[in-house]
Every structure is written in C-alpha cells, then in structure tokens.
Image (cartoon, rainbow, N blue to C red):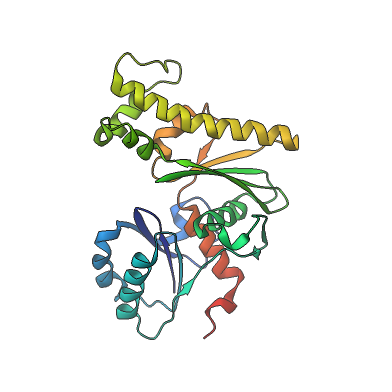
Length: 260
C-alpha cells in the first residue's frame, strides 16, 4: 500500500490511493484521504499503525521541523520503511521543468503540475492553487512546466489589513462580482482581496491564451478555492488534491524511487 503525504504551509494531507483505479478528479480514486493541522500530527500515529503501508512518498514545503515531525511518526508506525522525499528536478513523470533552476521550484507546485497534466493530458493548463500563498502556474500542452506567479493568499491579504479575518468565509461569500464596490469597510477589504486574487488569475489566463492562440483550461485548488471560484466568471473548475494526485503519478511512473 502506498502512503502519500502533502505537507503544506498550514496543513498536512495524507492519502491512500486506490492503485487499481485510474487517477481522476473523484474520490473513488482514493481509499482514504485526511487533512490535519501541523500541531495535530500526533493524531495520525494511531491511524498509520493499522495500515499495511509498504511505500511512502512525501512532498513538504513546510520546513525542517514539520519534516522531522512527520518522519518521527512514520518511523514509529513503519520502522522498516524509508520514506522518500519528492523534490523538483528537471524532468519527472514526463513533465519537463522549465524553471530557471528546476530544483528551486516548490515540490508542491511541481507535483500539482504533474497531477493536472495526468488529469488533462495534451491541454494548455493554468493552475491556480489558493492557500497561504496563491500560485498561478502554466503547463503547456507539450507537458512543460513554464513557470508562474506567486502572490499572498486570500487570508494573508485580509490579515495584512487586520479586518474581520475570522469571518472571512462569511464575508467572502456575500461579495457579488456584479457589485464589487462595498458600502462598509469590512466588505470593501474582502472585495478588494477577492478581486485582486481573481484578477491575477483571469489576467494570467487571458495572457496565456493570447500568447499561444489556444484555449487554456483553468483549474483552481486549495483551501481558498471555494471563495474565489464564484468570482471567476465561470472560467475555472475546482479540482481537489492536485498535489496528492501528482505524487501518485510520480510513484506509479518511478517505482525505482522506492528501491532500498
């Protein structure tokens, strides 16, 4: 059994893929999937100890402390296993990494690109991942990671103005695209943050379509995706867990990673 771990800046997701199923956007491709905060990592040990795991693949962008915490729990649950750390390189699973320094690309962004490409092969893709930061990345129809942009995430933008961030979801849902100009400060801040995020995504989408002369499929993922999706004018579709999907593709494409 394969255990996949996606350690992001605020949460850790882990999943068990159904290795007999074709990767798709539905939960049917997964036997189990969980998400927890960094400070709740102790709770995974009881779950992991019951699983017949034979391989582990980790993407971690949360730093050494989180990596060490994950590895400690893995060592307790599966003492005979050596987990594999996924890192960005020049080419993995058929995806060419055109970052100037390929190894500097965040492993989550590269895994996301690989996952999106597996779901929508031979298509021009724009992938917006909306979490602590928002990244907007391009994958060409030829399977090349072309690069992208990084901006503060929706919550981080709102927090920088110190206004009602605890109520961000409720306020965000009340904003209408047709009425972007709010008559109170809290909604004005959230409206500005939402339209800054969606404006960046839509501008990138338009720029890529003009650059290539081809239609571009826009995918959105991440914790803030539900709040941004209604404001993207029907030009994006939500796809969950793209990092885990990409890790699954990597594991299937490169069994040599797990050779001791």
